[in-house]
Length: 319
Image (cartoon, rainbow, N blue to C red):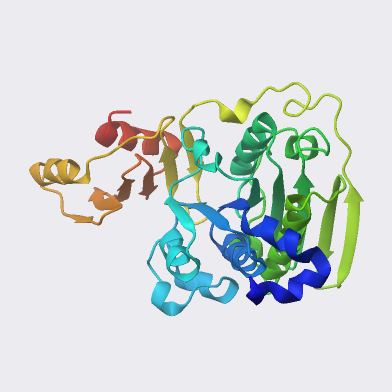
């Protein structure tokens, strides 16, 4: 407790104790999520839950807390080693969203709108507060969402965009932007966990112009999520999405339990070479490279379109 003594004049001893009893979930462990975990740990949050499906890559290093020796390791495993988090090497989807059940609050560390809408539906349905965080190029957005009190994410974005939105892979991002956004998100998380009032507004900053702005976000009277309680994104359906590197990810509507040893035997019978780890198996099918994870998630590199990726899923996992 004494290690956090510099917090006491600001939040008091009881406030620090409350933080140490709190559980916060971070969805995504990349540029945003890794820094959010770092600041949550430094502020003394008792338990940090992380859900992420990715591995550390060399191009992650400038904008994350990861080091060279972490490259090619699952991000959740690295965060377990560094900060003692409870990590789930999973894609967050309708069949795995229950991983957030034990959290008091959720922080966004993702990079796609679909997952944010899923988090929003889950949070509104369960009454859990969450914090939306988005970064790109030189700027960031942070918005606290308190179900029943503030606007929700679907008030802000009622529908999924009809065309691809800019990503960090295309528009780029400066290395100092994610930690700034993460620190503001954790500051809001502390206020919420301590029962302090937060407003229905978005914090916007641009490090290029050094502009900071607060924008009021009103609740929509016709919001499908927080008013009508139509939780579309919680419906269990196969999720197919094209990733930044051009690969296509297929996530089953229900979490599976793939026996990688049995799958390896099937591949051997087909005369296919493969790489098997404790978490996934990787092999080639003609021109496509396929990764199948224990949960049934499949990543296809080289598929022409989503339909072809789904066909690979059906071929190897009986979808």
